[in-house]
Amino acid sequence: MDIAITGLRRSFGRVTALRGVDLTVRGGMFGLLGGNGAGKTTLMRIMAGVVAPGSGQVRVGGYDMTTRSGRRDVQRRLGYVPQDLGFYPDLSPREFLDYVALLKGLDDVTARRRQVGELLDMVGLADVAGRRMKGFSGGMRRRVGIAQALLGDPALLIVDEPTAGLDPQERIRFRTLLAGLAGQRTVLLSTHIVEDIAQTCHDTAVLAAGRVVYTGSVTDLTRTAEGATWQMTTTGAPPTDGVVVSAVTREGGTQYRVISQARPSPDATSVAPTLEDGYVALMRRHTPAPAV
Amino acid sequence: MTGVRATLAVCRYEFRMQIRRRSLWITIALVAGALAAGRFGMGPRYAPAPPGAPAREVMTRWAFLFSVILPIAFGMALADRLLRDRRLRTAELLASLPPGPAGRLTGTFLGGVAATGAPALAAMLVAAGYETVRRGDLTMIPWGLAAFAAVLAPALVFVAGYALVCPLVLTAPLFRVLFVGYWFWGNVLLPATLPTLTGSLLSPIGSYAASWLLGTPVLYAGIPGPLPVLRPEPTGSAAAASIALLVVAGLVPLLAVGLLRGRRRTA
Ligand SMILES: Nc1ncnc2c1ncn2[C@@H]1O[C@H](COP(=O)(O)OP(=O)(O)OP(=O)(O)O)[C@@H](O)[C@H]1O
Ligand SMILES: [Mg+2]
Image (cartoon, rainbow over all chains, first blue to last red; front, side, top):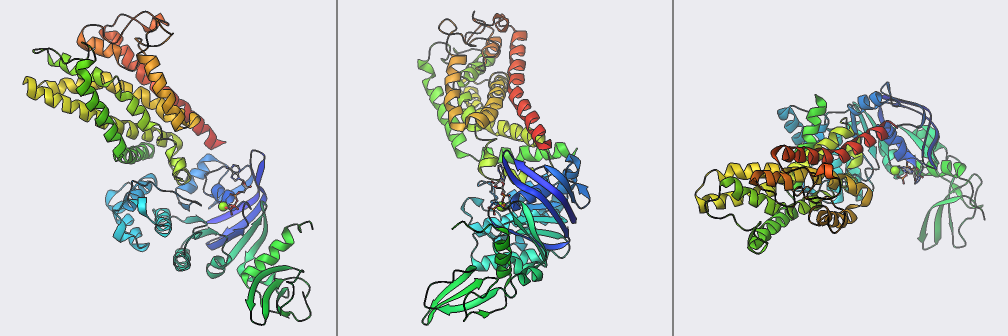
């Protein structure tokens, strides 16, 4: 499913969450990055038909999201994992999936049971499928969340910060699972964890204060920091120019990694940037410098 | 058609979740048990029917004994049902699924009401079983069901409408406190003391239905008070009107929320 957004604005009362978003997404796995309150969730909620766009054009798979019928059409082809998804403590994962499947219109009992069973297997919850979700760990709940989204084999999958709060192994399993799903469908992934995007997405967009400040390939975003990523070791004060992205104290002093247009100190060496460096370099351009 | 299916799905799962609440069963069992044990000391109206009384009278007495307090438990148990999706953070997911808010609301109402009524129905059946054995009259069971349908079920529907909707504005704990206050004001307090709906068609304690089933006015049915229109002679048609009014009045808040949510979705 292709997504085409132009001039999208949306406010909640006096807060403007999106102030003119232009974005095109074409199939595969697409990453959405941005700081707290940048507008990622609002954008995803609009694409999921949960909130209506304020103004502007939003087309998802050709359906017009400014109309109620367009939103309904998209919702029939959608899998959505909201940020901070809850669950019913008294239902087992099997029941919860069955409930969501019914609401998605999977009326045939046999087909529904089979699909629920397959998805529980896929996310590794087959053993606890009949247990009430009350005592489930964060990781188990996330897996139920992703399984429910896959019911009905949706063409569009919207996943809002699915790896927040997961341990590293679980996180890696999770993002690999998501990447594997992107083959036949559009997967929209938002996260604060740049590494998740680096490992799974070809294309990405970065939101800042309700605007898209970057859209393009992950490689090009990494290049934003090319020639501006430095490493230096010093026993003295930390570098004042640029943004320190890492500081590791060793015997010979502290090793800093710095994003800065100018060489932060004569003995700093230029190093190859990572996606995180690219992201930091980009955000540095788009956030007003703090008043000193 | 898909709308009906989705409503049934919501109904089914809301029923399942509500009926699994242990607190609901325990509360109803305790209240019904206490009323059954205490009925000898509650005045002649609540005392067991005399030996040889017809099944209709025996079971109606049980129904109006239960209707004094059980509907309070209904209100308590239903107060969190519409708030719950937001509190449990499932509302966002539900909103992303094709069925609209009207179907979800209807399903929640039907499932919640059915599950909340189940323990009360069970209590009536236990009472009917007990009377069947004690009086050797097999018609106790059908009369028990009839009395439940005429006296307790309308109260349940009426209470459910407000118990589901009012907490959206008031929060559940505040609603619960106010609801208990309302219950005694609107059903027990006499109009001679304060203007109240006690004894009117809109009294969910089931005054008119019980009076009709017993053939004699009980629970202040028709006593003079404010809104005389709502206080006709307790006859069969007055009982039917009372049941209809209670059901309609219970559906009004739901309809209001349905319309409001439908509009918000388009906004
Ligand atoms: N329903 C709402 N009511 C009021 N304000 C809202 C609402 N939803 C979002 N906002 C505001 O819109 C802005 C963008 O929020 P949004 O949740 O889209 O950001 P985000 O990028 O997802 O942030 P995070 O990374 O913290 O999840 C914030 O300032 C937020 O307070
Ligand atoms: Mg968010």
